[in-house]
Length: 454
Ligand SMILES: *Cc1c(COP(=O)(O)O)cnc(C)c1O
Image 1 (cartoon, rainbow, N blue to C red):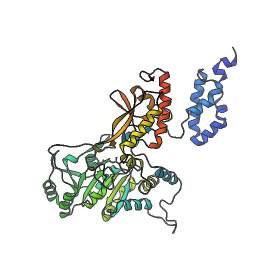
Image 2: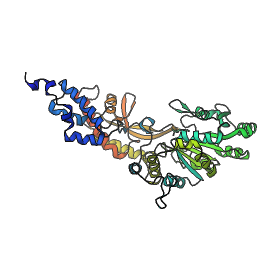
Image 3: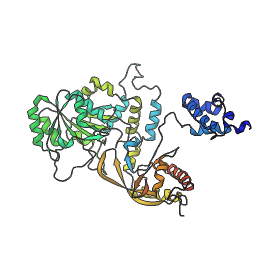
Image 4: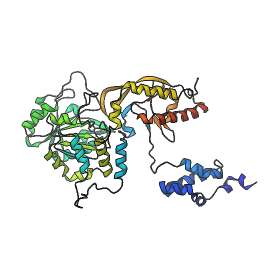
């Protein structure tokens, strides 16, 4: 028996493999531990005779992730514009640049002129204030839930928050707004019934509670609709009756629209709520605004200042990366989410036709009409006309498992739909590449229904 015939004896030593300059280079980018683990795994396969000794380094290189995170960049072909499981809003290139810049040492909290401490994130705050001129004060927290929790703590700990029964919503993953508020020491005072609430209900509650009332909360039930025999009290009416009694109104608009959106007429926005008299508005930064995960707090200057100086605010403070990305989202070019919402269906269809043509001969691909959704627990009744490329359903899993660029589509009536509305147009070519590669491999492996008839 020759040495090369015994894989175990021919297997190179770990040190020798790690000394390869290409792996040394990878270790300087990804960290030694990650590369060493990959080398050990490949050497294991080499000893088992599955990898040739002279292919070890190449196999390790192919197995290494491109960055030191296991997160994978996914192509969102679901047709859900703000997809919670895909990290909500993808950032604009300008916001990504800002993130990279902010990752180093910056003047986030230093006044370069005086050399003294400056207000943290002042340029991001200025951008937010400029974007919502109706807000006397602005503040940013880690997310929308944090903004609401902080407001509750600062204004209603040990007091009552008046809220309509039909607005006691669960926001996702089992978290509920009423539980959140009670967990920071407020008592909820429910008014109305599941389907109906009237101005009188709020007024009676406030009269009964007197000084015990911390604020009135108006929650946008962003992820469901109640239809039929319903009535709610709008922010204007609520603000008038609460102001008469000296109680602030806090409007949780959720979606993060700063101004009305023509395609989403039922979605509340910050400017309208403030103009209607809300004292404070809370919202998310990574839904319809299209920015990083954060919570926006906008409104009455004195109240915002009170909330901002409340001790718990320090525990909900956003990091420099968020501040930078938020500022670039607000000041920079239109981010992907608002861009997708503004896309004309004819433009999406033209892209779908081009994608289907690029796949001709590789896999049966057909352009179909599709209905996309806003997602992120927003605009529940709204469908956005879109177009998709329909592929055999059997491709859904292999596309998701693509090592380089997983593609997530939507399975509907036995077909895999790749809806292009939520995908940036500049990613169409990448989508075609992945489908060609995966369909080619699946076709040769005989995955049912994939091998094209043409
Ligand atoms: C999304 C949402 C929240 C929670 O915001 P996060 O940023 O996810 O913490 C709260 N209220 C409403 C109405 C929402 O839509």
